[in-house]
Image (cartoon, rainbow, N blue to C red; front, top):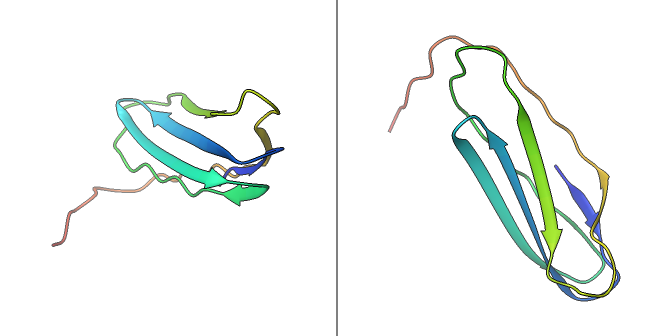
Length: 81
């Protein structure tokens, strides 16, 4: 979960990408915010996860203070309506 701190009112945008799956979060913030991104998918072999974040402000930086990334190996995923 990225935790972002910004200097002023801004739009924080983060994207988590794993293989051809992705999750996106957009927050209008002034100060501190947190985002939760979840991607579930099936990988045939070990791969790369990318966390990309940006903001809309021309003044100040979007600083990622903490993030947690968890990956688990499971059996077959089954969709249950």
